[in-house]
Length: 297
Image (cartoon, rainbow, N blue to C red):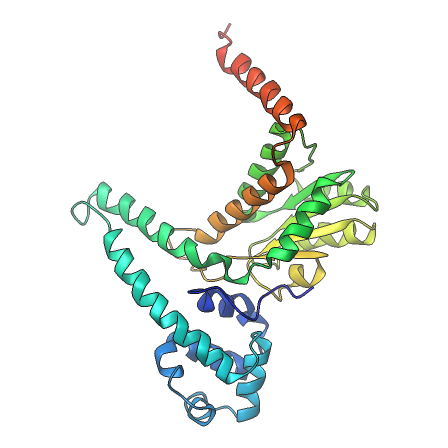
């Protein structure tokens, strides 16, 4: 199944290109980078113009467009033109969401971060294959056994998903250490599901667990930011979103927020409104009340 779309949603061309960018060869990356840096210029260019500014060839430009999922250069231009209009609209809206308070104050810092997150997350779904999402949800819903593996910064969204599953009666295993992850993956079989979460799609420990699960016949659902990452290529179903937001020095880890949202949506799709889920929620709520209501000895 193709893990990315050839027709990103309005405003999503940048996120779409970023999700595939790492898999391009250097000459193709020069073409893609110019599209990211100067979309307004590319939208008015010919193939020959783009060849000149990127020091490539017509064949490279066409190949880059194809590898990005577009029919050709004209298709890419049309999407960029469409999104330039969307960007102008979004920038006008962003002004209304601007940070409040005096620069340098806590209010200005916090409101600015929330404002930017609300704006940036909107384009995160450009590379998500909704058909793959639906199939993944079906696989989880019918799984005999569910394992979640993640390491590094991806642990938080993975653990949150596992807790959500348990709180709604969906039995889910999410070992915290690598050895336990790989041992549990080794015990999976056909009819089981392994959800592997890796922002980069390159974490060797997470890939190892996913690979073991796949070898055992389990369905592997990869949650990553890059459409042609090692995890995406390995997975039975790949859920790709969030590639645009990767700046190691940034204060706002939007990529991880996107992972959290994708997994939350996946949980919602799996659980729905079944009576079993309602009963589980009620039981969990009673237990939480019991725990927090106990008087310390």
